[in-house]
Image (cartoon, rainbow, N blue to C red; front, top):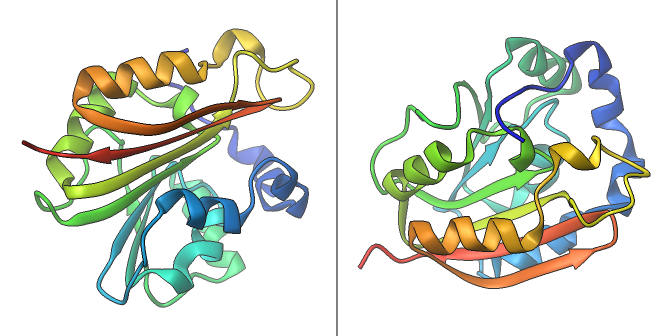
Length: 189
């Protein structure tokens, strides 16, 4: 575990609709557990080619697709970037976003690639009170039949502990075969 990136030469794999077997748009929307509105700002950490970003964009007013690799944004542009999506080339631990300006954050199949402690600290800064953070990722408890090697993955228990220690209120932490789902709320009290 630790910081690394997905190989841009394999970016076409990220546009495969077979990914929905591990996580669907409806599942993500349900995990946010809010009535997303025209003013809500979603940040997609490790957005890659925009597969999930584009699927969720119609449900949010503003979306920031964050990826550290410009090649991933190039793929996203080729696929067509929705008008309410901004491409942000940045590390997840130093987001060029205003304090408290974000309502929801998403990480799909990328939490195991992030500098997690620094990213969580940065999310404390950019999320407004009551902001949601939803993670779907490859689980260390999975069989390793898809996704990265098990040695590179986190478990739902590990992520729950990291989020709780950082001040997030975790209301869902589920192991789901090859993947896990975490849903948490930021309360800056």
